[in-house]
Length: 235
Ligand SMILES: Nc1ncnc2c1ncn2[C@@H]1O[C@H](COP(=O)(O)OP(=O)(O)O)[C@@H](O)[C@H]1O
Ligand SMILES: [Mg+2]
Image (cartoon, rainbow, N blue to C red; front, side, top):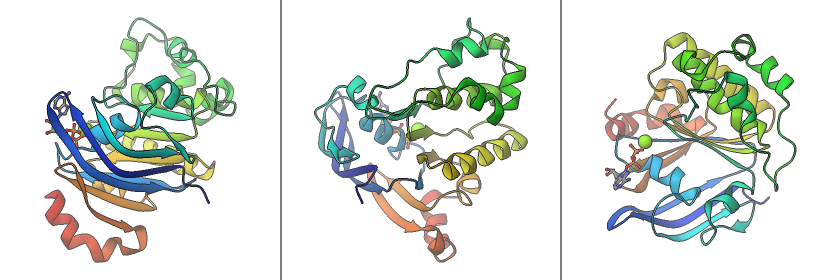
């Protein structure tokens, strides 16, 4: 089976600053993989490097078997990747629905979710469809940011700290969303600080430290890995 994402020896820089020192990671189609680590470990940079949004990159990043290390961001996205950055990027002056309709469908991907499907999955966005971006709660903005990339047809989702700063009831709704997307066959890479959110959702875990993968294991090994995980994450 061709991996949805296969990263080998990835190095990345911001200007002179060398941030990733050889990241290796494989994500199979339909998997939910969590990238854990302390602040500054290099998780966001890994997602940005996959999208071609850092400075220089070296190594290999294959998406569905295609090498992307030399590609510009728009070509990488069109391979069917949806990137949800930490800052969410909701346009304040546009309505919820206008935000949803903004990104065009990706050329290389299949059809995106229809607006009706999205509203069925996110009933609170349906209720808020005419509300201005600024009037949405943090949780609604986060759901909108994810819903928007589902519209594009992306099947590989890179989600950066979606649970951050949100109330427990919203975090639970996001967990149900991940479970639903997994059942629909999406491939998901989640960067998380919130271990309790990620733990029951992920098939496999990677832990980063100082721009490298320090530990990787499957969901079945979670309990056995707790002591070393606690040490690495300081939780
Ligand atoms: N735009 C940038 N320019 C220079 N250094 C950066 C930039 N963004 C992040 N870094 C540095 O890269 C390292 C990894 O950061 P980041 O990938 O954001 O970590 P994480 O998402 O795991 O918290 C940190 O040392 C951070 O200071
Ligand atoms: Mg980050």
